[in-house]
View 1 (tube, one colour):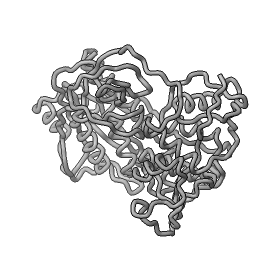
View 2 (cartoon, helix red, strand yellow):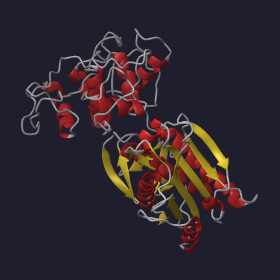
View 3 (cartoon, rainbow, N blue to C red):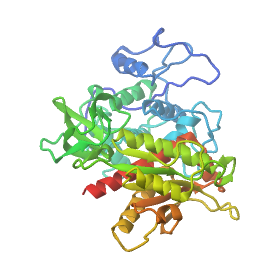
View 4 (tube, rainbow, N blue to C red):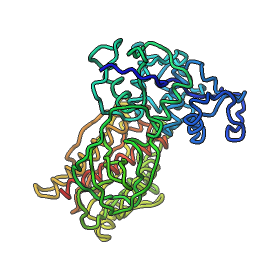
Amino acid sequence: MVRKIWSLSFIAFVLVLTSFLPVQSVSANPLSDIPDRSSEEINYLIQRGVIVGFPDGTLKPKDPVTRQEAATLVGRALELNGEKRSTIFPDVPKASYASGYIQSAYDQKIITGYPDGTYQPQNHITRGEMAYLISKAFSLTSTSGTQYSDIPTEGALTTAIDKVSTAGIANGYPDGTYQPGKSITREEFSLLIARGLNPKFKVGGTDTTPDQPIGEKYVSTSILNVRTGPGVSYEKVGKLSLGTKVTIYKEVGDWCQISYNGTRAYVHGAYLLDKLKEKRVIAIDAGHGGYDGGASANSVLEKEVNLAVSKKVRDLLEKSGVEVIMTRNDDTYISLDGRVKHAVDNGADTFVSIHSNAFPNNESVSGIETFYSSAALNDRAYKSYKLASFIHDRLVEAMEMKSRGVKDVPYRVIHATPLPSALVELGFLTNSSDASKLGSTYWQDKASKAIYLGVIDYYNWIDK
């Protein structure tokens, strides 16, 4: 069907300030040129800190949006890391105000560059590019066969446009066209971001809500945020506590639509269990420590990385109701057998040792590898293999590193324990690319979340 919607549509705005100019508080000095028809949506974005405004106190709503501005606005809306840093694109310098958001959006697979490897940050973003950007940024998956007279009946662009139209985020022009090559204004892009963040601003989409539930699950974390849509960019509308039973109506990627206070909302499926089981106790072992520093290269010391990531894993697991036994909480040396004994004596049911790799003779060697020890062909061996596999798969995806596989090697710390166990090598400190990630708080956070999710995957597998 061809849509003929009169309402304002589409994307194109990101209020970014030049890095060398002071900014006045927009809450104290509202932007002077906000159009009345868009004031509610734009003021909503101002209150959320998504829109900042220009130093002269204006929005410039009719100006076209550049690709670097679009990345900045989306980055703010999704609360991505906007710290200035080097990017994968040769034409986006570290000093650029948008460099952090561009790299973060690239890391999240929200944006891509051109075939020649450039980003072309000053180019105006088009309505076609908007459809790709918005559908990825807000994890849109539903389609309804929406068509426009100037868009092919099939293809990647057609699907992206269908997604933003079905979601009620963007509509076509009264003549039934979409005009994918047209630039987008700041006002138009503001509307789309607001609609993506808050359903009350949406226009006539056709996304349907199923009436029949598909199952029930239980919250497995201390506090689980409830959101208006399937993504962290959507507004929080409440919280659920550990053990709360929820009714599931549909799954959208990693998110589940639930019934909440008489309406429909979304929670992340990683924090849901099919049923509650006995209390879980896991030992997290930060490799090396004290006088044993482990590997050292590219100004990164292994024992420090291991401990930092282990503590983050601990915090995530404890929030999910899992009791965590740390073999070390500080820079202390503990023997391999002492680590195993500490885990067993404190009632752990699972053991995960966290390390960083090195290959001094070949700095090109890189990637993640995860180990288990079969010890004997028994239940513990198979559980160890599954534990290592779940963690490995999550890490490779999150860290965007090469997979070196899941391997059966009798390392003492996982061979001597009677518990299902795995040893993780996060990457090679002797490889400059791996080392830059392992020394970064941002990537340490990603690694810890991946290990945490791998452990949860394992426990879910055990429960089933």
